[in-house]
Image (spheres, rainbow over the protein chains, first blue to last red):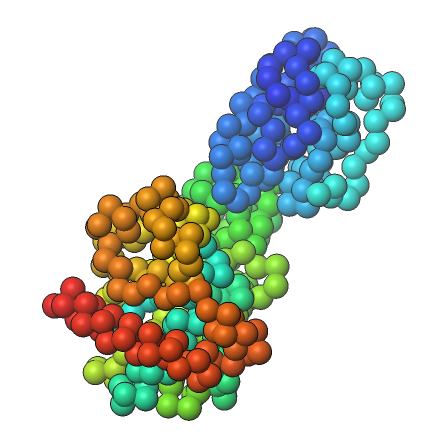
Length: 115
Length: 297
């Protein structure tokens, strides 16, 4: 089971990037092995259109089944839902704090676009 | 001869000048066509009052997926790799199509080895056409919520291309430097760049001038709404770019004029109520046609 968190830089102490589509990168945590990886998102960041969909592709390709992020747009959410990825909303804090809050069940699952 | 009227910044006076030039050209006996290619907000009709008798729907061909055929061939994902606009994307074993992002290029159809995709029409807007007095008139209207303006603009231009050889076509282009502007000016013999004489207007005009240069389209500028700030030379030197570097000729300087603004706000053509503005437009058209014919020759 892998979780992807939109982040401003790699690592557990990075702050959560409030944007999904145009996030700087995604920190991807493998909950079974504890392995940490980073998926670059610069292609989406500079895209004129379709950034959210590209970002969805990035996290799906990284193997994530759960995404923790700030705000997610309608096209990105539809793409993530089609790929059976759950999205949880988290404002502020570090990647570490976001994962802990999600694990405790205190983050809200996103069912409608938030931008 | 096709002349596009463009601007960097919106609200520079593009439509006021384009409609004025078209009406005066028609008065002079030129067979004149007015094409409103500012398809996100066409407003030439507010001044020209055309009788729009024809309406044509504009469709973009977008991919439709046969999921079973795709799955049977293992969801290879080549369609998504072929698309540069994320209009079709392969997420693991799911293919997602976003018609609103599709440019209708057909690359995904060609890339699919399983023939699991076919093209279906997706409506983006309409082209309305008819007659406004002596003017032939057409305008594009992009549907609300649609992002793809270029196909609508292309269809307006196609309508206008059914023209009489000696005629003049005035294209009212969308402001800016992006795809819709490029599509509107493409194929024009000459471009008149309407420059709002403010720092903001000059800054954006410089970007538009660079775009036209990159496209290899010959152009001249008209400085609009010139006031004392500009007359004193401030702003232009700082922001004027190509215009002030001397690579783009300035055909006229139209002063800021409250009466012109008032006429416009009432929905009247300023050339009909402000004689000094009519004279300025008369002179501008004469110079524009001279320069454009010389450059096109």
